Every structure is written in structure tokens, then in C-alpha cells.
Image (tube, rainbow, N blue to C red; front, side, top):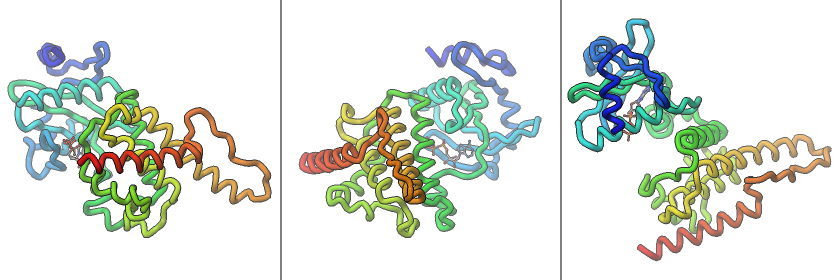
Length: 279
Ligand SMILES: Nc1ncnc2c1ncn2[C@@H]1O[C@H](COP(=O)(O)OP(=O)(O)OP(=O)(O)O)[C@@H](O)[C@H]1O
């Protein structure tokens, strides 16, 4: 249904659309072929589950990234429709900006803003990991920012099951033992906030709970993560301002208090043990 909508817009290739909830430009194939040098291999900047991504430059000099879906399966059609529909509807500083798309024949192309700083995975595990540019505070900011981006897309939705179960399986025994240090990236060389680490791991385990009912919404995740970051700032301020009698006991709605944090950690360990027994 949604797809038929795109098709009828695509009749006029240069049309700018801003109909109802969708914003974006319908590019012509010629324009995108020209921008990417006919999808030349040298322009290829990445490969995802649904297709390849190419760097390009429009005639106006704007750098773009063009995702070219590889196979016209029903799943790929769905990915295309969902991506264009959701990114076309939401604008958020932490979400990749959609510039537009092309759909015609067997060709499905999605045009995004070009992001020059490489992917997060490249910084964490790829060519740039050795430089370790992402220290702990930056990682915490990325965690909060990503959660905010996801919450902007679908605020009350929970993360789908089955994601990255390999990491969860790997982390479980350490969570069970309370050995959180083992989970921290060794590249950080111990330079991280222990309390924040525990909270982030507990939140991550909650998001990966086998029972969807127990998974928190993205809004809840944002609240918890922000609270973890805020608490550290408060602690640092307290140490600096040792002479002051003011305490940091201003827990508002939605904060994870130390008591709640400890309870969450305990119940997460219980959950992990239960899931392990069920295997
Ligand atoms: N807008 C962009 N700017 C710069 N590089 C990009 C951009 N979009 C994607 N890339 C690069 O292309 C790679 C593949 O992106 P793509 O969105 O196809 O897949 P993915 O998000 O890694 O996985 P999946 O297909 O499962 O969503 C990314 O890892 C990144 O290196």
C-alpha cells in the first residue's frame, strides 16, 4: 500500500514531496548515476544487509550516500518502504538524514546525508579502533544519543528480540558473577566509571530480555541512561565542592536511585540465571 504511494509520486521524477508525513526528494536515476559515477566500485563506502552504499556528489556539489538495494525481494521492498517512511517522517539530530529516494523498475535507491566520520563499528572494532578516540564519556554520550535517536523513531517500542544474542550470551556469565570489569573494552585501559558501566550493562541486559514484556521502552532506556550520566556529573561536582554541605539527593521521577539500581542489578542476575537454566 505504502509502496503504491511511492510509485505514484515517482511519476514526476523531480518532484519534491512533503505530503502528509513524508518529506524528501524523488531523485531521477540519471541524477544518481551521475552523482555516483554509475555506482563505480571506487565510490563504494560500505555494504549492509540489504545492499551497497556509495559515496556521491550532486551537480550542486552536495555530498551524498546512496544505498542501492541488491535484490528485489519482498523483505527488501519492506526495508525500503520502512526506511523511507520512518526517516522521511522523523528529523532528529541523532538520526541519519534522509534526502530522498528513487524507485523504478527493479531499482530501489535511498539517498542520505553523507557522514564523513566513519561508522561506530569502525571506531570500536575496525581500522580506527587502535587510535581509541572514543573515551568513556564519549561512549556514554553515544549510548544516550543513540537511545534518543531510537526513541525519536519509535518512542514506546522495545528493541526486537534476537538482536546481537552473541554478545549477550558472551556477557551473561560475567553479569552472573558480578564481574563487570571483564565486560569493559580493554582498550579503555580501566579508564571508565565503574558505576556507569554496571548500570549500562544492566540496562543492556534488560533490553535483551528473552521475554518482550520485561524489555523497557526506548523512552525508559533514555531516562535510565541520562540518569547514569547525570549521577556521575553530580558526584564529580560533589567531590570538587567538598566544603559544601549540599547533597545530591534530588532524585526526580524516573531516576534510577542507588537502591533501584542495586535492585535492577539483582533482578537482572536472577533473569540471566533463569534463562541459563532454561537452555
Ligand atoms: N550516510 C552514510 N554516510 C557514510 N557512510 C555510510 C552512510 N550510510 C551507510 N554508510 C556506510 O555503509 C555501511 C553499510 O550501511 P547500511 O546502512 O547498508 O548497513 P548497516 O546499517 O551496517 O546494516 P543493515 O543493512 O543491517 O542495516 C555502513 O556501515 C557505513 O560504513
